[in-house]
Image (cartoon, rainbow, N blue to C red; front, side):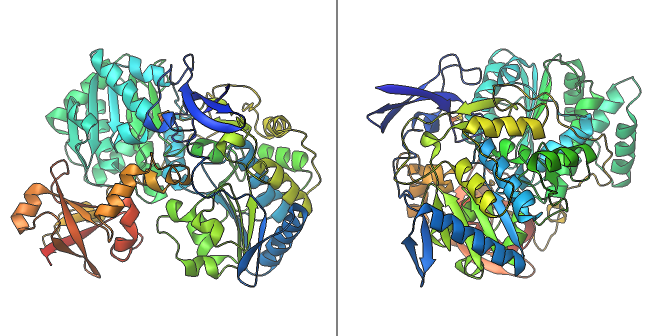
Length: 626
Ligand code: SF4
């Protein structure tokens, strides 16, 4: 039996594991004992990593839609048709490129190069980017550079401040690090709308409504400034002045105690989870939390860290590789002269430097899309209907799996899955790690980086002959100095200007008391694992989601037991949820771990409340028995 060392693709902890195979067939998974992240431990998802490429429908041939049907064609024919359709769409309505956290760094880099360099379009983005990159940039601006650290450093901290969105489920190794720290006597502050298992272990849990928590950060910053005798930084002074003007509440005794702990801690970890909120609000709240670390003297302290948690696999890598409408590869600003000069030299063309549309807007406003390993239904705030995809003049999809997006495509280019791919990925620590092929490609599937390089050449970009994926890595190193994807390295900082944020991002109006609409409605989480194509094709990993789908075929709404009792709603009884503009009826699931006045709809059923939420992350609603 053969065992190939690679990186777990599911969450951004990115544990090291071995894929075991025999005669080209994947048989099992084993942890890497010496891996610096996982140290021989895997979560349940990781133990089943070999299942993902085995189950479900694989794409094994290039397909072109003819008279409504996807028909097999040769690779040269598919690449030629894809280039023609994308060029035609570019001339008639514009074209965009959407990438994914499932892509390797090399695939994301070449997708960004194809967009800005070959298609000359600024419309480039990746699914779920808005759940992570605003946190990353907000922290970098608050601290004057990223404060990254390792999972081992989390376990060694004596104070942990955790935005709790169910870390044990979304980032199991991070949760394990927090628990290890607790066992050694660390203190834990959590905040969030659900009293999760981890929140129950906290020294102090602050119940908060869904969304960003600039107000909580501002209150803690006020308490830190009161307790610290040294002169605060100008950004802190400016922020506190705007916070006072906005009426930030008194921190209270408990937060004042946390502020003293933070000032005394020799190692403190602040972990910011992705939340459903507008990107600008997330960035402003992350900036506020970074200022708290700065004011407490943890901005440059070895052993202290402020980490945003990317929700899925290689989301950090996709963002760093330039899959963004407002940044160049390396996360450089669009106006950065040195970054522009490097790209123009390496790509041998003048790229598109404008700011482009976000993925959700691309769907509504452009004529064509190139989608790289992304299932749009799982990564958009609102799943696009078949109408939205059907109106596109060109939908070219590179994927390993027959996802709904691939099946709606005008052209399908089959690429290798995680077990058949070489490349690199970046985890939540900023660690660049290798992904290695364990088995041969399925059918005619080809590595995504090869397909993207060939398509860019067909579109007219100077022909770069990459003999192997390492050549792509070498080119990335030339475009993004300091990021050497040929070897394993940790990224210490990003290029981000020191900046002050105007709007501190106070909580949404929905969070303010409203006697007519006393409940806050939001979507539970920013994604459902069961909808991730890597998980969706594994019966073992999808078991929870399948059970939920069977239990609630038409959706459900979670509410607090005391609230349900007060309104007279029994479990599974229909409940009417009404805002000022819309209403919907769903069966009630009564829970005791939810905060009062909070109403959550499972991520998988978010379409049911799309009209109620509009563009907001949370809205005020009224509940009545239906
Ligand atoms: S913690 Fe994340 S990276 Fe590690 S095995 Fe589990 S899913 Fe994979």
